[in-house]
Amino acid sequence: MPLARSLSFTSLSGLEEWDEEFDREDAVLFEIAWEVANKVGGIYTVIQTKARLTCEEWGENYFLVGPYMESSVRTQVELIEPCNAALRRTIDKMNSSGCKFAAQCDEPPHIVAHFHEWLAGLGLVLCRQRQLPVATIFTTHATLLGRYLCAGNVDFYNNLAEFNVDKEAGDRQIYHRYCLERAAVRCAHVFTTVSQITAIEAEHLLKRKPDIVTPNGLNVKKFSAMHEFQNLHAQSKARIQEFVRGHFYGHLDFNLDKTVFLFIAGRYEFSNKGADIFLEALARLNYLLRVNHSDVTVIAFFIMPARTNNFNVETLKGQAVRKQLWDTAQTVKERFGKKLYESLLVGQLPDVSKMLDKEDFTMMKRAIFATQRQCLPPVCSHNMLEDSSDPILNCIRRIGLFNTAQDRVKVIFHPEFLSSTSPLLPMDYEEFVRGCHLGVFPSYYEPWGYTPGKTTHTMCVCIYIYMYICAGVYMHIHASGVYIPFKSLVSNVVTFFLVYKQEIIYVVIVTFLF
Image (cartoon, rainbow, N blue to C red; front, side):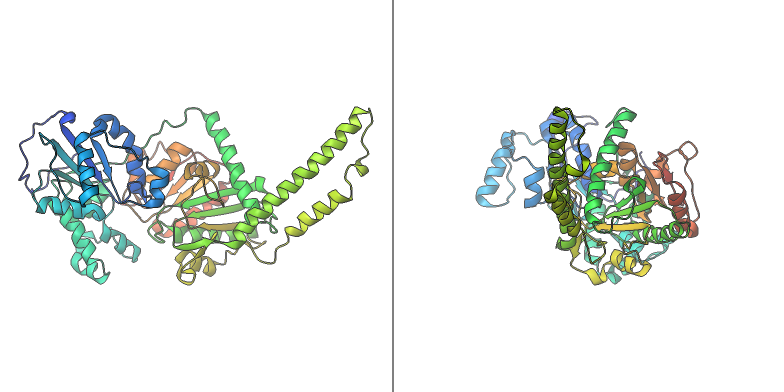
């Protein structure tokens, strides 16, 4: 989606004249980002999903550069020796004598360096300052100042042209980072953003009009048949139900077959990601379900990483109790089955009163006693480092969603990214989403909106998106059943939707205001 080329802030000084098209075998592409094999936000998904296609195009001339995180390297990186002889010599030299630049190529290739976000922007600025023969690209997925302004309850989009950017950055103690971001934008040969609205934002806050808009892509061919969706949904839903049985042990006074699973996920930005609106809607939904004596239960998951020091003891205990009850039931079932089998072998109908002995009843009574609980099911699965000042927990305390028996809406805050290796909820994000009924993404500041699109197109669950979600621009409003409420009515609209749409619905509701 080309835009009109902005006035040149920089020249290609130090670079040879390139033909319009050149052989990729004579070019090397470096992609640099803080989220290479380091999951923090949506950039991780962007790079991960396009890496395979980029490798197919560039082959061994494509390199990803990111921070070395020991925990991430163990699970996401395969350590191999580089095939490129020049690169291998360079790495050996760096390992032996420190990080120094060394020219090892007989004929220097064309080098393209693609930097993502201000965290990697310092490398771009140094490339230009040292006049290295490198063509640079800088992509901003969201502006730093934009995030802070939106989080500060500012009427952001209606006042873009009015902000004193230096003052606003200084007032928020981010002036040094803002200057780095702006310097990277100014020095880049090509400046790109991921959406039209972010391009407008960057033009006002970073003082440069992007040269091109490169929307994030999605692989929508993951599953091919509807029955495949249904089978995977049933399997994933069963695993979520197992977690819920453990989490709510002792207070499992609701029917899991009449329980709807909702979730919100993403970077922990309380107002930017719309967690505040979601909680307000859940409180109103809880009231409506209670006054109408509904037998439907709603369980809302908040998947947003925050600072924790460990799992909640009560949460771990719940999963241990659930497993113990399952083992007890399996033991009694085996004994019952053996006696039934022996009775049928001799041609007699079993005496039901003698099928279970005193030992079986003792085991079952112990299991029932283990489910007795003196406290309510926790609303948070981990121990928070800043419990008293956490925005989600404080909002839950204010609206009174404490997972009591009277509440028809239950809340589970999981302040950690989902992982199939977790001892608590051993599911990856895609599997978890497939098991839920509804994903809710009421974001205020969303430069693209990757998570809702991924949720809809690859997992087939319905979503609710609010306000400036740029992915919504690419949806045909009338054909997709899109409804746009007024901003002041958004909490009521969410509540209305949740109350009357309790079954699985494959409809995307997108709301964005321009």
